[in-house]
Image 1: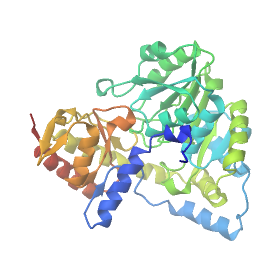
Image 2: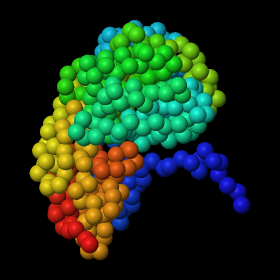
Image 3: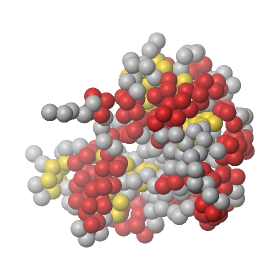
Image 4: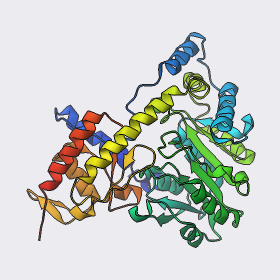
Length: 400
């Protein structure tokens, strides 16, 4: 019997995509499901960006693009990093990929050898630990609970470092928690990293502009570790361009060269039309970004208020992104109509099949007490979804 490779057999499927698919299957059966499982802005791509894509088609940008990305896009990214982050890069320190997901994977595959350790703060985005597995690295997970706003401390980081530590993945603003590291918190973590010269920091900043506490802070700003930080970003969240599939890395030249070599062998350059649209995103009017941020902030306030009214849910106030990540283990050990809730996966399935709201169980994010809700949908949907969740949870009783 033919078997798949060990590397594929060892991978877990994406729980967020799986829940979204189940939601769509119920919708196809005529069931009114509100999908809060997917991490995707519900806004349309702004018109000036779409216009740039149409112009690129008319101008016949229909040929293979350079592996690292078009020069005008890399220039626009360099200018964005200077304008928004006060960081100096050159165009040869930028590599454009097919989404920030590929950017993360490119870096891990380029720097990790079998047995190298990668520190992953939990809660984490579902794909980080799977990508480390793909690179044959070893995940070293640091858990940070809701009582510390899901952010690791310098002491936790120091304790996790060993001679085998090769990288730290840091996501701020965070998926799945919405937590945002302050400049002072990043400075303290950078001081720990500075003592260990072999560690590379992967700074996933894809939610940079969905931030409710002031200017975004990048760990790349600290000179002592600057030459060991890889910034990962893209257009999907800030510009509502998830389907365009454009991400980038800004990094030391040796990492860019390695990622360029890798990408050249397995995908080549990203979509020519998407790249031209992304030039308009980074270099054009940024009003749309602020308008979407304000809408997400309003929704954040709404969903936090409503969720805090549900008995048994432990809710903090996320400072960025568009996720709520409440602790829900109060409901573990309960049942309704013969359906038992043993863990967060059971709870998420119960909320989907009984409450008709799609969420994601926290185990996939390294936080088994929690569930993730995306509030990247309309106010009306959020009000109805939280009402359904409240009603479904109220029907649960302890079994035994």
